Image (cartoon, rainbow, N blue to C red; front, side, top):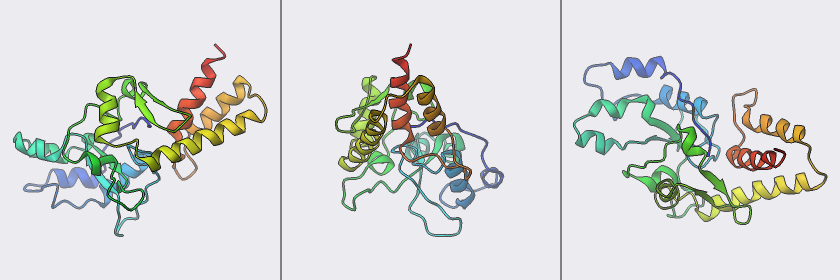
Length: 216
């Protein structure tokens, strides 16, 4: 999981949000998707899979409202459905073509306590090198990750395990010094020249941070 640093909403979205009578359903969303995509370095805000969006083209990316739109509407707060600070961009929630969904498709209209904007929440997460599973030391967050978001979908676990095993093999060729680990951490925390983060980079950052603490 990566921490998402929310930026300023795009001007096009601000203009639409302030248009009398506008609703989330009737608003144009290309600029919104693009801003979210750039903010997240091209990764799904939950599972860290690569997501692709080309303005003007049909897309399978999904705009997720952490506080569900149905809840905001039920509370008489339709303006919340347009709130940029409540949105992230997600993948299509279907990694293997069957109906075992994950991310916001699995979440549906359930409100979760885990927030990818919260550094303290991200810090509770760890991964198993054995099977690639994700867990949180916070019981409420762990339920959100596993039961609501289904982030321990078998294919997601396999992908994370492959990342961890590949890194362990690379490090096993010769012991890495503290400076080498710090260098790799900087690399995986950084974006490419195109503004992209590395797929599943949160797994690598967690693993290398754990290794780095062994030098303390």
